[in-house]
Image (tube, rainbow, N blue to C red; front, side):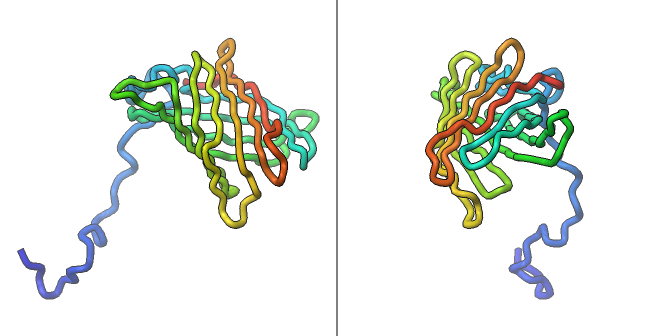
Length: 199
């Protein structure tokens, strides 16, 4: 069927279409509601939830600092987890001082056919222009990630490698993160203990 002569044939049909409603598919950090967890994520089930807690940070180029953090790990029924973290600096009286690091990413198991192996892939991105591609290994409720590649924007700080350990210990989410940056090799950077507050 040919277009009418007064229509622009290069104009896509959605250009003047009416607005759509909000995103129609549910994402959940609570396994009691929302979509069913994809079976390949069963080994990662203990991580799904909202976690809050405190940690300590540092690096050879900065003074040590205390921080609070919230991590949300959710799913939408597909074979990956969505990871979102936001942290804030605390003073000596545990009062919030200012926002700190933010990060979003995706964790997904490496599949053998339709079965999850103990290997993971993760993509972690910060608003400061650093994107890390991690390869991981799961052993029980412990996960170890190492960077396979680091991509930076032209204005980002020089980060060259990372190493992260996550674990569920007595119901809490614990992690330790090392970073290589600014001419320094892998050095302790962040560690924290977070408690489940939802999920």
